[in-house]
Image 1: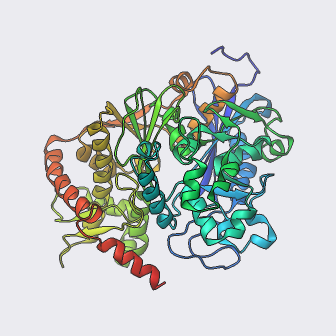
Image 2: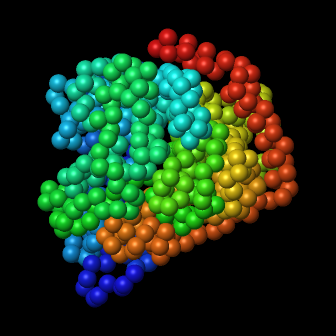
Length: 554
């Protein structure tokens, strides 16, 4: 890279659209230093119980409102610029990422259907957030038909397509509200919709198209396959197709309207959209083959590149160029991690513990960590399955639910808390083991995301997985990754790996596994796998029956 001259453009902006908020950072192109940042909470949050007009939602729904995303551009980006003391003319470009698959039905001009007055009370007109799991029935049928037809793309998704992905959600719209399906001239990932809001040009990024849209070897699933699912589903193809843009490429120039929103100059580079966990690999300097990144947040995504394609049972997807151009990108994940911890504190923590936390000046999470930290491994006698939001990998079944065994009248809340932390670590180890068994070498494990502030969790993960755990030193790693992609789109670096090496975050610390604790966790992991296979691989169907009964009675 040629260093910019004095007074020349020297910054890029990255914006990360998460589950509950958006985060903007202003980053120095030369070294990746974050000069300014801002966070803006979504006004509508996650719609799980009712629409803004009061229309009730069924179980397992999770929607968002598209104007919350625009507000982030109008509020967080100018705030980050002010915090950085950056002048608009010093900015080279902007990049965005978003949760995925978060699917938005729109008109051909990009107008979200939920913003049409006549469709504001129709749930299927809203963006379906990544953790919208109501399409499991459609996903099961997709898997059954694809397996029966021998669809060549199915092994690249571990043999099972998720209810979180694009096809299941679109099929759900067609079956449950065909009028909304017919009015939807486009079904678009939120990251791609945001790029259109910024530059006025419709594009599709190769990562979301491959991992969430089932696009492999230059094409989506065939019209014949789609008609086998539903006679009219082949109409989806024209609504998901669009100009495909490689990661780190320039999607267009910032429009005059978006310039007014953001305070940036019109015409600066807008990078192709991307998936939040995937851009984080660049921020973590984890784009080289063999370097796995675990992004620990409300859910966990595990991302890595490899030089070759291998079939990994239960993987979320394997896509050529899906993380960085020129490598095979692999994704796996856990549907609930931070969400599980938040549920426990919100719904199950005794009032006395909340009072004690306030008395000590701690959060409930900090109090539970302090009480659980010195417990001997296995001393609580508990074991949990981390399926409160279903299982993304390796079972790919969102009709599974959480399990906790070993309770006695002497069990204390902090013991349950530690068992839940350990369950998510066991789930992560299940994924790492699946990669290793399939011949995809995991040479290095790095973690990023909001949960890396929990030191007990990091210690447990290192001991359970039995590997050194490198922690990324970045408060907003996805936003930093989006900024790195913006630097490439603006021409400051030739490619994402080069930009990652120059701008990626340093390591904050490395957690080494303790041999004694790891040995005990090996024994507990064997018990976890036995419980995992009993409830998830056909030993009993009780979790599915219980969920079906819950749905009937709602």
